[in-house]
Length: 254
Image (tube, rainbow, N blue to C red; front, side):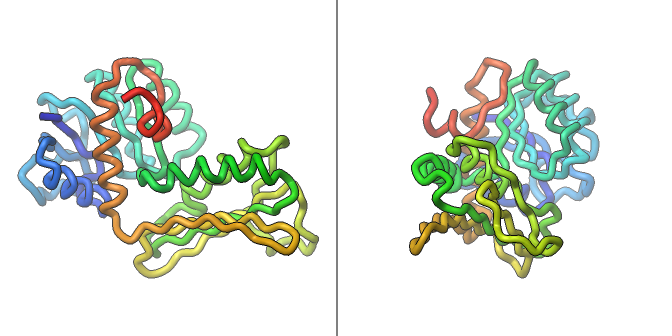
């Protein structure tokens, strides 16, 4: 049975991962990590990762970027692979992750939905086929508690489109400050925050007299939790220290 540590266990996504593990029946949550150490389930919760010295196979992180440094230090010290699902990382955080991936396996994705990761491939292929003949705009919508904007998934989609283009585009996050026609070398990214929207992403390819739209909607956090559990099971089987992602899980060797 897979032994799992959940960082951010008392947050919205952490709770969803706990429920997904219970539904699967083949995972044991051995500890939780959270600044709120209230015990909501049958496993102990610690504020400091170093407080847990028991056995574990993999760590899942759905917390806050500020929790990353001690978590990576803990994983390196214990030789534990880590599934990083948190968004809003700074360039310093990314450098820490890249450095840690030289020592331990790390699975990193801004969105744990299987569907959104298939959408990345569709967007990449569409950008490659349509090129500069179509303008690319991305609109993402999330609940009013999400603190980072644009979402990490929106940036993933923009990067996927960029990979399909022959020249590197400029990401435009707002147009209020300029009164100029849209440039051909742009990818527009817009963020909407409101209500309890779990997550919605739309990629628009707008050409001359025709529009192609790709859209993905998450109706509950259970979708993301299920993808996270699948990633944890996958990463626990990997021995090579490097950064893994959904492409590895979906299309790589299982």
